[in-house]
Length: 543
Figure 1 (spheres, rainbow, N blue to C red):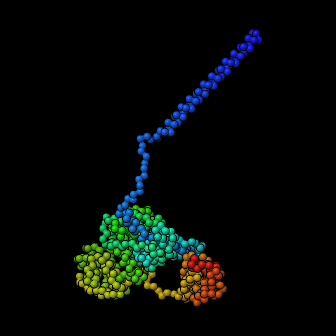
Figure 2 (figure 1 turned 30 degrees about the vertical axis):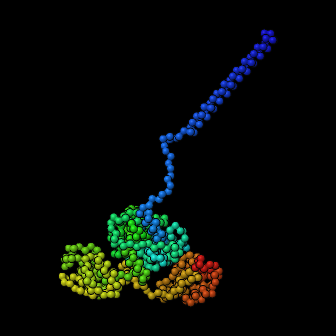
């Protein structure tokens, strides 16, 4: 091929290659453009398409409260229900080798410990002994209470505050704690009266109802602080009346005839109100019966009429006095048995008589049948208890008994039940003469002069003052002083009598150093300790 022809061939070849490349590039560009347009249109279609085209969007209507009677009751009563917070110093435990259970841990009294734990109150298993224990923080517990008086008086359960060294009250959703004081209590009904010092606007007394008007099937509303959740409202009905629940304190008392309710009552509700559909307090929530320890629909509340009677006696005389004649009888009085003993229209067959009690002194005998008291016919044991308990202590009443088919009238004096049956009921009985003691405003403890009997019991021969109480969170508590320590000296000055403590205290000022010498009994006997501290600058903070 000639050179010129060869050049023309190469030129045509390059032109065709360029044309092919151009066509390929053009085709690709058009494809990309078309793909982009198609994808854009498809994406636009997807974005505008509804996921559920046949669904209607939800709309929130303007707020319109749904009012009902329960709403009104809750609004009216909740301000009258308080949260009670208690602190108790840890129980002293015995050395492991000689550890014993506390009273209340044996037999039926174990149920008492169950209810105490269930309601979140301080306490628990422990022992008593002379061994030293590490210093611990106070135990805390919570319950509920009912404001019943504008002066700040509350009703609650006694087991709520029974072991409390400090009682404080919270109102509504306010977290501020106000100090309170136990005015008095009644173990027979497990009730206590507490007074709180709080601003007047927080004191909203509840309206007390007449529990005699309550019927089975009535609405019942419980309000309290279950598990510490304040102002909790639960609703149910009265499922039974006059229930007697056996199983240990706070039950098994003849003056406790409970309302049974299925309104939810849980730990912390104890001491709160059970109210009717009118918002009136008809009971004080006391406990539940449960196989699991949780709510199972069996709650019990003490009727308001009983609670009001207890409250009135406590605010008047500081305690509740109930009459007794010193007899025992079976709770089940079989009509056939009564008829055998000559009682055709009811009565109470006496099965035992308290030695030295009023009935024995008046000449009453076992197997007598009591048929009337002060002219009032007696049909059963409940009526006998009610009449005698309401009769003034130290008064004398005529009592008719059937004996060998004949009517005998006896003049029987009425005694104080808590004194007459102190041992059987677990009461301390008549108060003994108080030992000399002093409340140390600056130090935060109480001391008493050691008697010869105490020294002999404690196996302590030297001088000193016995600490009988230490205030929680006080200066004495902070430096480690304990109940049953014996103070030998303060700031190296011997302490032999109460006047010594007063004199030393009067010579101190806030911010001064204070050093104690105390004797503390441990496994090896009495040991000298030297707790000390600086009196706080602000008395109101620590005294």
